[in-house]
Image 1 (cartoon, rainbow, N blue to C red):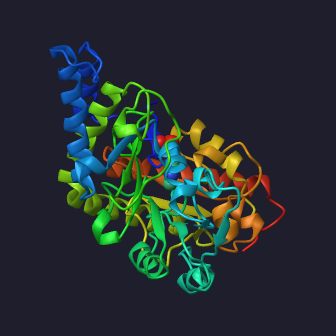
Image 2 (cartoon, rainbow, N blue to C red):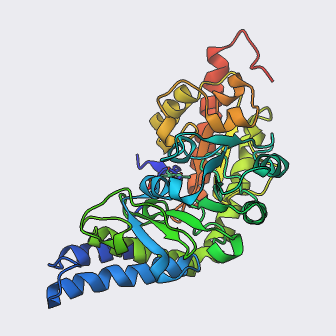
Image 3 (tube, rainbow, N blue to C red):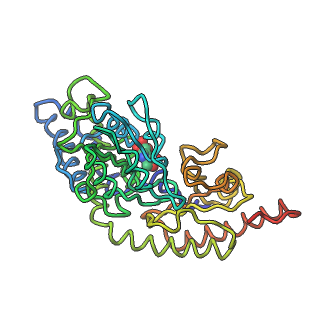
Length: 377
Ligand code: PLP
């Protein structure tokens, strides 16, 4: 049985064009910092990729700092040189919610619909002099798109800077640093069909995060260490493919996602789709059914040949319900049942039907297991 992969928010299949770029770059000898021809060839690969990644989000190439991924870019962004206090939304990725290099972090609540509470942000900005605020563009669990441009305007009016974790956005929705008003933006290659272990921090000219890694002065002193040339080359090509394809892919995924959600509800009308009332990524559905245990359901789906996650991949295995659903005020029993289905560029209508067949069986077995008790509404 070929597994149907529906866990694209956790990681995506390497795009063939990116794979070709990685393979070609691995054959290039030379350190990008060396002045000889071999070094210059490696440097060219890095700089071409920098241009492509910058173009994906409307930034200048000089604003791109390559990192080992989204986690490192988030840690780099959350530097105490960027503000005297840190505010982050309550639904951020663990690499942001921990506060990076700030000793103290305050959270901004979200609404029960899964969106940043802008009135709460405004209240929390009052009286601060140089706040750094971190708000993700799209949530990795619910897919809820956050009102980043409005938040940025408020933060700037308060004399602060805003960091935007945009890891889940490119290829799915428009993602432009200037339109969003982002001062710092995090990207990750493996979420857009590039290789794992490479990402970038877009650092606008107004910002100056202190480096996390100090050494040979690479990345204009922002991130030392010989560049991951092959990974960076693959990231650049993936960025270019995604930039060209965003409109078509988003429309195609919306159709698939709508069929998916209609099917989930037709099989079990009591299923709850989280953040369904706010704008969401076209590829993400997080749903739950009170009484179901997400860990058990994920295993049952796996046995049926469907790969998906319970909430965020990084928190799988933990019994505690997702901090995102907790922040939305979802009851713990319902939150513990949350299953995330996320689609990508290879997802087909047949994959959706295969998922729905499996869901019908998973749901059936659940009812059998609890045959004496109706699943709670
Ligand atoms: N930010 C968000 C919103 C994510 O979903 C992830 C990955 O799951 C990351 C950051 C971390 O990115 P990486 O896996 O490249 O470290």
